[in-house]
Image (cartoon, rainbow, N blue to C red; front, side):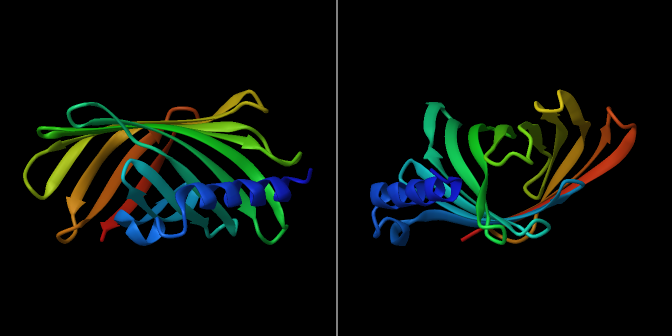
Length: 204
């Protein structure tokens, strides 16, 4: 079976499971933009009860991604969120990646932490398997600013080598009532260079 047929079947199953009216009842909807040395990502997402979903556009590649998953509360202010996604190349008309993911979010007192594990498994022969791991801590200095360290790791399993290990410091700034801008500067320990990341997040 062709990979684009698999993508269509998975999307159809997802729509049947969630139901047509579910998206109209979506809460905690957000718009997000990420920009760093890896490129840009534009997100929209939301939640239906404990079910979570998002859609991502990669402007540099013209790729589209759809993800869905479930948010499990594990302790007060702590959630574990497994997700699964598909990345599709609409110009080439083929599926690019299967994307299993696991997230941990913690917001307790003045501390907020995030741990991301994103695994991209290639669906076409000319792509490689890799992971993106992000660990981020932000401490609330005041009602407008949070600061703290972060770590990122990119590893290519096909090439069997690290393609980036970033260690740095970030600042999250309130940008209106329901929006934040997170700016970070890190050092790439593999290539001895400086890297930067910007994330804009707006809830509706």
